[in-house]
Image (cartoon, rainbow, N blue to C red; front, top):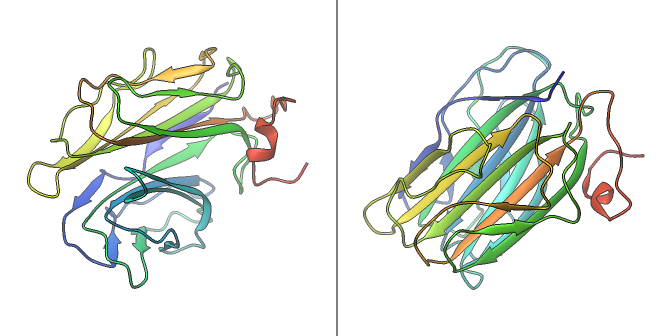
Length: 231
């Protein structure tokens, strides 16, 4: 048994310079847990919300590119096989560009709410973004990773070794921006996850380690407190 990840729909990308962006519509299976990654450029206020069929809850958010750009992670429980269009709202602060990508998650201990062993977010402006976790990833866990960079053209990411092929989108015209998402159902044991990218533009990235159904083991290293579940 392993945690399974399926795309809800294709990654969306837009340079509308809008306060609200709609992702690509998709239909989950009843009982899916949905985890949605959002990145936005020139969006200074971290106060975004998400809507779309079910209640979406902010898991975490952070800044990169000296605070100019943002990454958000939202989640929702799909109680029925109903089409949804995840839509992010930045309030009064328009984002110059935005990418949205959602995973359907099955086989995790968190059936209707995420069960996360640990997550780690980091930023930088080097080649090959590396994300150091709180501790080594449990080989039975499922993993999701998302990275975004400002000032790049599309199709620049290579997923971490052993992970699923990267799903990416971006803009080749100003404001240039690119985002990539990748997953691994099991088998990861490293404590540092590295993406390949030859450019040195400002980037932000996050890795989530998701507990296997019936097999979660909480780490004393601080990762367990990352989860929204109660223990």
